[in-house]
Length: 103
Image 1: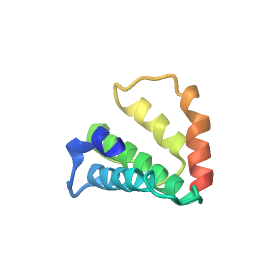
Image 2 (image 1 turned 90 degrees about the vertical axis):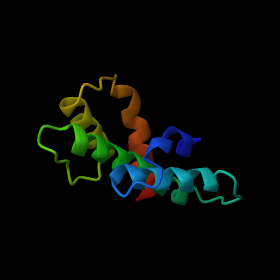
Image 3 (image 1 turned 30 degrees about the horizontal axis):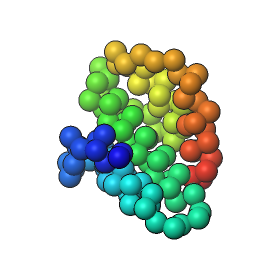
């Protein structure tokens, strides 16, 4: 499912391509009997982080992104530096859970 959402980045050698690779890993893990969710959370965290950084790298007027691993900070940067608009309060709790679980 996630690799389909990011399929336009399949095998690219940049941040978005790495996000796609983590999406593939998430899809593979979804079909296994692994009970420890931390490995899946790690791949979710990496997928989101790399995708947000890709957006910031390609859309920001500065071509840079935060070195922070805090997903909510990256989401705020995406919102500030692009035309992407959303109610970010809907995403903060999920992003924090993914980040804490991955750590």
